[in-house]
Image 1 (cartoon, rainbow, N blue to C red):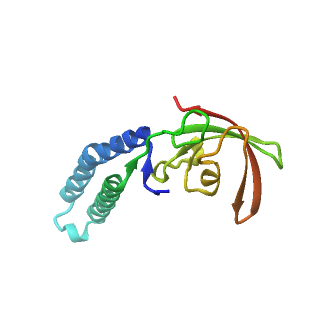
Image 2 (cartoon, rainbow, N blue to C red):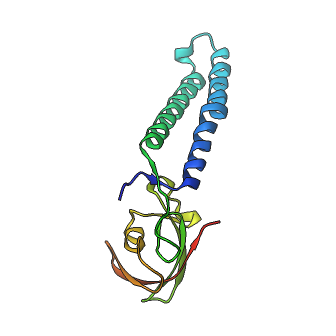
Length: 158
């Protein structure tokens, strides 16, 4: 699977983030540099100026990385149907060893956010459930060992 696959929703979110970085954040960074430069005649001895320039360089690097990733990414379209796990769908699972139930949205690697319940399709769990059907049992192999999950439901993310 292409590690730069992205859902249409994820593409929209990352494009908005890139726009924010290129507009709002760039302006704020330039303003910090301008203010810091005004405080001292010798910018090379002005720590605020040097810090502001370094932060600006980090911002520009972040923008460049995001632009490269977006240029290389491919929007994934769901074509498997409602009964097959695909990118952009919410999958509910039951851990067959512990009985714990979990729900994850399956997304591309650029969109992964564990706190928000979004797992990458290239992660061990994501790869194990991708293309599987409701009711199937999957075995996930991780450095800690094997865990068995049953897919209890698959639904579109709204």
